[in-house]
Image 1 (cartoon, rainbow, N blue to C red):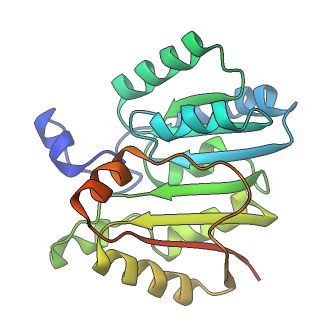
Image 2: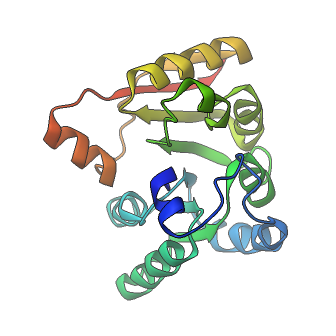
Length: 210
């Protein structure tokens, strides 16, 4: 996920989730997503795909699964899609978008087998907590986008944010925890590599609708 510091370094405004860009183009891209993924047994979305490491490695390791990515920075989206092209991967593609509105615009309801949200910005200062991505509103959109048996997988290195994620899941209601290991090859994300090297604990939870 794009960090606050990265946005500031590019001179960008720090937006409320979903307010960074218009998602009108994603409504058109939805048709492309449906068309390119129709031949695959599963469809997964990496929300906040960063530089695309997890998405591209997942596509290589799981050729029967289509991986859609959403990322806020256009240069990252461009580089990742060029890499996907060089690798000849037909089962992966990234689109530019921000916040729950981008997920809503791109992905049809009841479409995803799995939604990945890995290491979103924790906004550690209390006065910024309202900017955190994982809240009841985001979970409402996520629930609509998942199939009835679909899984939401959340990861963070921030203990306070992990506690908040669990609280928001409880507030939204109707989620049940399922095993993290799901039988598919799950590459390590860019941020997970960094946090593991530092010996920092990682909070993770996988849930489905009950």
